[in-house]
Length: 389
Length: 95
Image 1 (tube, rainbow over the protein chains, first blue to last red):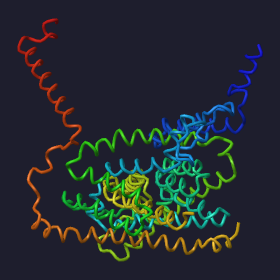
Image 2 (image 1 turned 45 degrees about the horizontal axis):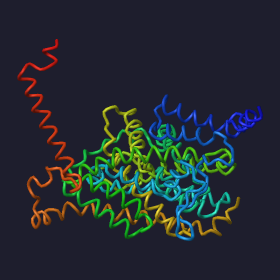
Image 3 (image 1 turned 90 degrees about the horizontal axis):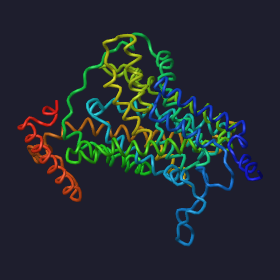
């Protein structure tokens, strides 16, 4: 009988706290949003389920959570898995920034830079949208976060989950869970957050602008670009070496024409596996005791601000460019500069088509969209270089 | 919560520097992309593209035997299929 009572004390029901219940509810909401609303299901389902997994209470002496400590290499040079759990071993890929570059490899192997190569001025929209990163950094400093924490929070505005995870794992690992959840939540909510800002900042005439179709880009241009683009960016901001190296390497695999099998693996099996492992463990890292703090609420608030400012920055810069251009840009595509590939480009298309159903903005919006990926990785590289302890 | 926090951490300088570096990098990328089509004819004259060079699918050396074996299996399957088809095939005969 005593054994039975001891067992009952160890069950999740007996140890459940209000915080755990709230987090399990949040996990269910994530899964519901993914299934019912189709908001980033490939991310929200693993993260949502991970939140549920991470908030099942267990006996403290058991190794079951992502934070169960283990040392891959001890001081004596020997490794030790003592005290490790399955989740904490997988979480190693998040904690030490292994998964984000692998995701970038897959993104590179998926990305077609043709629209960007056909209209190079649109690259600047990807740079303009990074204003969200730096203004939010200042907002976070204002609220009392340390520079490292502020930079990790600011990068949420880059609208790039892997970049946000990579930078926060290097600069502010204690905020990793909140930042990752915030970044992915807002990426999933791009179709909700961006349209009102885009409409507010543009006139109907601007939303009706039709852009010239992009020119054909030769195979050779597409093959040269990943190497040259990487050299330019990595030599200026070596901190972005890992992320951009993998992005452009993946793209070279795609465009070289001789490594189709490798490109295919990178953009399908590899990225899917890493997404599953990353999503699940990032979700599981949101244990109520570490996640439900006022800091997390502030991070969510700043993340929303970051997205809004980045969207506005892209749209306003497109309007500014139009002052000097004869072939006008539809300023809606400036919002795609926040990265969040390809959702923000789809949003530009969707908002544009509400005014003119025959206006095809998607291909044009892909240019600032992929430039935004490069821009946010450079921003992360710069912040890491400057703020690394 | 104070503006002094931003000044103490050098936040303004960091933001301006960061934004400038991002802009400079992407402006250079943009200039390179604009310049590339002008240079390509020269490159093409020196290094013409090889016809059919990229049509084949390469594979790492360690994978070649596996794929070759798979190719062999496909041929065997095709041969069996042809033989069955010539004889009327099991599905037809059973039906």
